[in-house]
Length: 622
Image 1 (cartoon, rainbow, N blue to C red):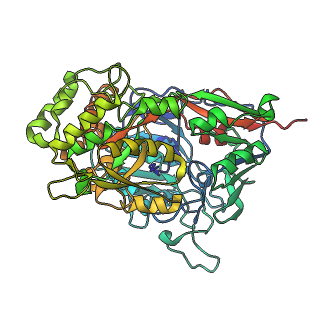
Image 2 (cartoon, one colour):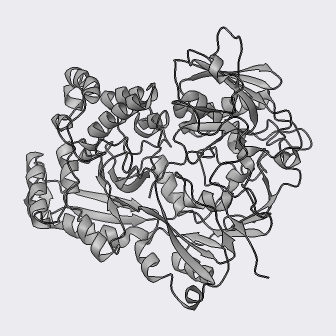
Image 3 (cartoon, helix red, strand yellow):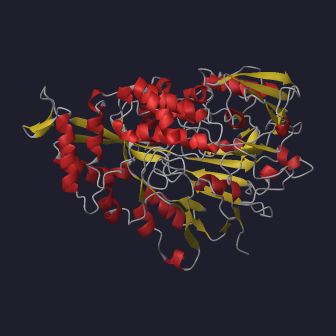
């Protein structure tokens, strides 16, 4: 499965002003900022509501490999090549920290003051004088500029240059003041640059003064300001982090509100398993403390036994309020085979979600129905309906200018994903698929579906392991009924990621996690320029002037209503272009854990693995 690799340690910072006549008075010396309206937490708040401020500290948290990452070959998470170690984000911080119970607010971490220009074309951060890197050196404005310039250069993963393309420059104003200038007025960019990971200019500098180029940094220990250091590691197999005994936050005279209740473990250990069955048995044997389960069958059948019966091990499905975004079988439209939207639409009719959910998933999943599923940003929010006047204001001019890029269907209710639930049936769906394929010039003859030149309809599905084989096999059986030939190829995570970076695939499973406040990251996911750059999130290869125009509308939205109109219009265009065969999402986070593990009330918006690492704690049996 392809998942965007964006560095997601969100932080918040306070912006410091230049001239009183230039800056918005309401944001001077703010404790926090929000893209729309006021932040939830007032100046001087003590801690976030979703943490336990009295959580005991100590002990070791041992976790298995997150997701499908079965190995690693570097520490540096910011470069294109290779796979970085799990948990490496523990070593980095950003200017500000995001709040997990708000849509778009941040609060100061490395920075203690923030001020946004009244025209939203620049923002200044003032860095806390106490902030220190792990080598003891102070975090300075020059380090912030260095981090930004490095990530925007060809030395780093190209997604950073795409995501921050509207940031003109970072300017050092003084030792601890840095200003980010934007190319255009933008309400999201002040928050986005607050999330920028910051690292020292000394990272890669040896004792003799020699410097390893950033793009070649592999197992050189990162120099960040985060709460943990690397204690030891076995390349590709395990890594152990220990609490930095001189972590700058721990040496403050007063607790820092955005760190109260966070990072309660003295050590964090990751053990990597290449086999999921072995990983589950290792958990039952007590080799690690918690496990997030992504497979419905294993959750239903595997987490059983005497230790679950006596309470030594526990399992909980935590409610998931996150936007589910889009997950599905994505085609690579760079391939001529998939450039006709009728072909792409036809492939969707061969996926029988209702059978899969009943026979394989134990009815644990809901159907993806949007690129912003489970969110008020979806065009399907509150049910299928025609576009609003605000959406039409965006869509109609684009239809006039680019008629071939705006499907007629966008002006009606969002069509549901193909269903086999009564009165529909798989038989009827396959008939619709044949009709669409016939319209596109594909006919069944000589034992296969063929085009006018007699070439068979054949493609390859690539996946990063065997986990989806049962699903793919069921889908493949239906495709074969249409005369379509499909090859299945699986590989380890590293090789799969390499193929994704180079767009060397026909079809694969993608997951685009949703944000409650999408913005500039959509350029990397759907933008035309990103489709031309290796390693972007635009693995589909979308190059549409209409999509570009609507992403631009998303990024410049001035309030929640404008954002909803823009995302819903974008949703309609993407959905009716049939780039992805929508799959399903889990309305819960499935977590199994040892009885010694404890947790606070979950926040509104979170991923389970970071939540465990950041906010849980352990109380060993006496």
